[in-house]
Amino acid sequence: MERGAQADASLEERIKAKARTIEGTDTRYLLAGYLQLDGLWTRRRLEGDERDTFLSSAIPFGAADPETRLSIRASQFNAIVHTPTTWGGFVAHAQADLFAYDEGARPNLTQLALRFGEWLTVGKTYSTFMDDAGWPAALDYNGPSGAVFSRQFIVRGSVPLGGGLRLEAALEDAQANESAGGPNFSVSANGERPDFVARLRYEGEGLHAQLAGLSRSVTYSAQLASLANVRQKVSGHGVSASAALQVGSDDRLLVQWNQGEGIGRYFNDGLSDLGAVVDAGGTLKPLRLQGGYLYYERRWAERWTTTAGVSALRTESDGLRPPADLQRIEYVSANLVHRLRTDLFVGAEVLWGRAERVDGSQADDTRLQLTARYYLY
Image (cartoon, rainbow, N blue to C red; front, side):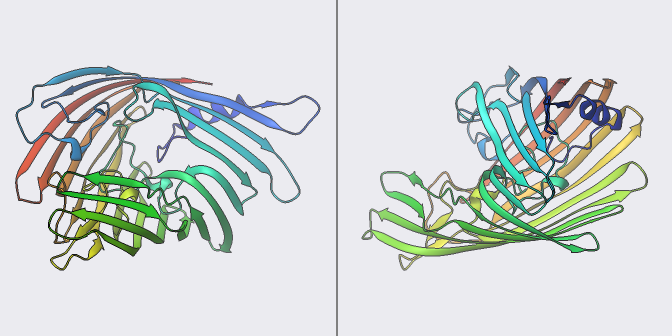
């Protein structure tokens, strides 16, 4: 239920044991989640309304004061129902936290999906383009800037190929109805069709790997002070490769590389609100992006773990873009987590980020996060 987290074995077994059966049926259900309290100290207060997670794109370029915050928004609740059938079983999963962006601590539905056996998933859940099983266990809610991360409405089919391989394909909500810019340059976008995503996954002893591809079509409309209105349909495409390698009996090496055009909304952080540029001839082109991360998860002792790594997202596209657009962002994090009891852990995480604008100016920031999480089941 936690993205990418490697649950303590005893916690996992205790939560499974709490599943209940509806009387007179074979249907089982589970209600579980956790309460989380985060203490956040940031060297330079982040810009924008969202400051309870560390966004490298929100690092201020001007003067900024330090800020201290307390947050419970990462707390999470899950409801799972399972009914066995002759074709593999039916599972319904609802998940919510309090992290509705820009809205304070309000309920935020993160997942609402139905899974039919191992061959069909329908509803709001992790994108097929994302590798949810290879996600580093950072304490920060958002996580690595250059990672692919998206939860949206999908229809996904899955076919086992044998030998630990599985092929999956999905139609997903394009979520392309956006607008951005200013008085001299404005751009809006509309999705022409659902995004098409396919991936090949391998699950073996000591190794998880995924290769995913994405195709999308978006119509951009731009208004420039010096040129006539521009309207153009552009195609977006991307590829993502990731792996989680078991090192020894307790450690993991996590790596991901992503590249594409017009796929900015799939990244965990952003360089541009729209993801398009206007070249010297007045032609709209999708923004070319490249990102990734390298993380290592280390278990020092039975109840002590560390997750540390680096991540980056950049573009090499040239052309006219809004002044606030960024050229590159970087994200670094390292934590130490101690499980006091099976259902309670505390941890500390240090985060550093840097942002670079199109004009070459740079700004950086630092955060210290203290976290306590208590599991409910």
